[in-house]
Image (cartoon, rainbow, N blue to C red; front, side):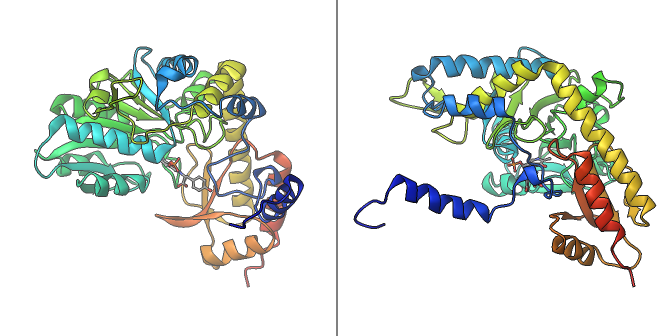
Length: 383
Ligand code: 0PR
């Protein structure tokens, strides 16, 4: 840092130069990311609450009331209004909190968690941080968690089973009704990672889709991750962790001397209230109808692109269940395809299992982006 400061104009000019090097969702060129352009209403709400710290909620009672309302609205969306939870930084923190609650409730030696092979890598972080063993259940022919494999892995040391509603790589929904039955029977904590699908599956069901239950309406489901900063259109960082009952939060609460609350269950201490304000504002502003439109449009564009990809001669790895498409080619490797697309300005990603070009149709993607992308796909010379 220099001794003397520089002018505001200079600061913002320099920042602008850096920002020009960033990609932007608005361009429609980012096709491999689960983030999106934050909605203007969320951005305005976020900027109104920049100084609000939910780590000391007694000082920010308005924001705390907003958080309570958001959690209750999310609970209503996910099958149980009177739930507990917090708005936090994202799916990683939510999954770590859920695993911590499950571990602390049992307090056994050598705790184990069972996740599908398709689970997000945040569970590996959780297992490492919490000194737990992570067992990966196999997937079935549709790339969903295989129930037989779960049954084989369950032992006296299993403190939690995880099912995913919208897997990171393929957008698949695990057989959560079956998982709920098994876990309820065996009294095992069941966590659902709906970081991606939580803000779309319920709305899609309201407009005629037919996804099975994955939420608190199932008696075995103890906690759910749902990320407003993915399909919820909130600015990053905005994640959500929901628990069926308060004792799950209590199981990991720590005494907080000198703060305006006695105990704290979140991992971070100082915690922005801006994410909560943004989520509240968006849920109020868009309503169910608004989110139905967003999720429905993403699915329509997903089907359109999937069809065009096949017409162009590439192969889908699997029928898309949510708004993620994965494809391969007979001749070119997925890396070669990604490189060619990158040269044309597109940022796709590559799924690891199975290996495929991975495209996520997030709310900022428009029909014209898809048309331009398909033109470039068609121009790929396979010889
Ligand atoms: N659970 C699921 C099912 C996820 O897909 C993700 C992240 C998480 C948990 C973790 O959420 P946070 O990243 O909010 O902690 N899924 C995306 C992914 O790994 C995150 C992402 C988004 C990565 C945009 C890159 C990117 O450009 O693909």
